Image 1: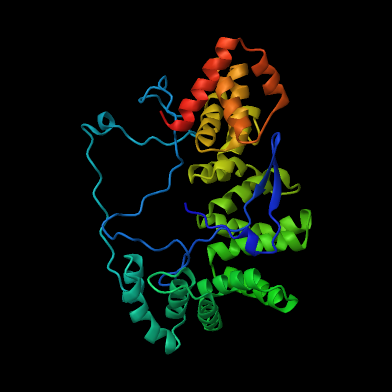
Image 2: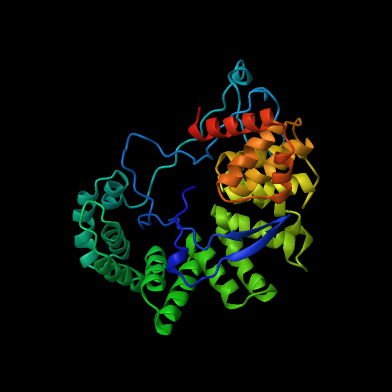
Length: 379
């Protein structure tokens, strides 16, 4: 999932949660459009021939010793079915396609195909006649400068019109711009009200961000209790940041029903599978330490490896520890040294890992540095 964060633009303080041994901050904003013809940043497709693909975490260093047919644990990364699994099996019949009974939005269709001038030509007359969805689309094109000169002042005008017309995405985007561009208490209050209204109308991104507003306005358990329903609604709609927040609240907030606390790891798995590297890091630590469920060293190692491969520096440091202590993998001092070197180069220096590294032989240190250099170069 693509995550467009606007934390610098908002007064919302990120929510800090404790993972085992790691303090992590939930990103303050996740921007994802969920309303039919309405448009938010990142919805445009530049090539109509290429179908949308699920965003997967980058894996830079495949493990040669892992067999392709190895059965993955339930919480592990999904591998799908192999060709051999499919041989001899009858494929289920496709369900009958339901006819589309809604109104086709040619302007939005053109926008999705990257035909921004055509989208503007189709949407602008409708926007001028008061169509809130078209107003949001015009604002999006102007705000991002897609095929036209960027004009944020005009974008702000059209977002305001869309918000006044009742478009949830327009409300959300206008609230974001108010937070970004204005420091007046009146505009901040108006932004919060619009965010809540958009959230109550079902906009997933607004639900997550309004939860952040509640937590910022009421630090502590009260704010988390007030925000939890909005986090949950956003998580159900697939916002990975919200899924991560729900998992952390379920495991840390007291007096929650047992049926919620039992689902903490489930929500963290969903966020991790969506490619959220912080969730991958925490899931690896939870599995290793037995947080919110049973210990699973092998799967915990794999999730930490995935987060480390994706560039998460804390995961790289933790992975070095797993190689040292043979947790979920065989002991490998050179591989441990490699991940320590990578984490240290990125600015994270663990004193205990440094002591370990200095205790390696000169040959092992040289091999670790060579491995780190090869890893960074992709060779």
